[in-house]
Image (tube, rainbow, N blue to C red; front, side, top):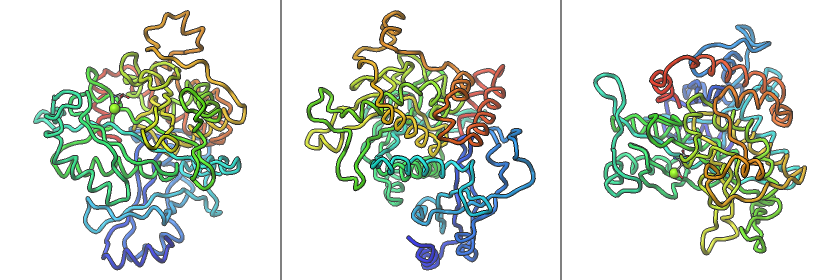
Length: 450
Ligand code: GLU
Ligand code: MG
């Protein structure tokens, strides 16, 4: 769509508000709203934003990022292609934004521009990337004493859970579809109030945009049912965590051939797929600082939680960080993909998918090989067996993950030093904020943030 087409459609629908959305370094979705009257000028020139917003952590505490203070301005410039009328808000649409510097170029700290740079890097190698998030979320009610109780305490995949979730899930499915996000599969998950609704893959930039819309939609529709939807990685300490596994595959430039497919491989994965996986596994202890981006994330990443706790690689291994997903019957070639389980919805999807692509391309460029596939739960192996198989325990805290990211030269080069530094300052400040606080405080402040 062009700017003119968007403005025309907004006028013909009589829209009142057009949201200009972005995601910050703390994983919070934020934005500003244009009136219809000013839409054309805001789309052309952007809406002004203080650079300080990219120095803000998830508690709205401003961090001392060098060069960022009260002075200066960047512009939120929406991508017209991302224009969607919001089915859950009257007379409102949204668009996803890049942050441009006043010289009209991408600002060094713009997360969406970072993902676009990685997409361009892949395209220079002749690749396009197909991806989607597979989100789990928790539906809850606010209790009179200000806490949350799960919508249901039914069993995993139980039809009683389906019945409990049905009214809200039906509306979520409709609302996603109306925004060209296509639901594929739904079920009540293991945790109390936990539901999982997967959506179709798209090109990787759209996948990041869709993850923003998905979080927005699920929260808003739940609210219209008098519920709260939580994307906290571990909304309750004693219940299953909310993962947001990332599925991805590398395709040719026309999206006509899945380059992860190899009929001759025991798991149908091509050498390119193994190289990509090797890049992810090698950088994973640093990558999780971005894909498992909150303090609460590390309560989820524990052994025997099916969320991945080790840098393991395996076919259909639900305890492996990187899983080779078995193919769908009748659609083998297109459906071969890798799944990153060490990922949740508390982060910035542009940074997460950009970083995932960066480390995958690193693996491809170096032609790395992953260590042997693991077909058991890595937690059941002895420490010696894990060392021999090059399996490491993932970081136990956000600050440990941030230390790894600080030392990861490939991710630093891909992000650029300014984004890398700002991101680390924000993440370390969040780790500091929650250090010494109890679990109740941590859960309370993550429950409704994402
Ligand atoms: N809830 C698990 C997680 O935290 C995933 C369970 C599954 O879908 O296999 O990632
Ligand atoms: Mg699941």
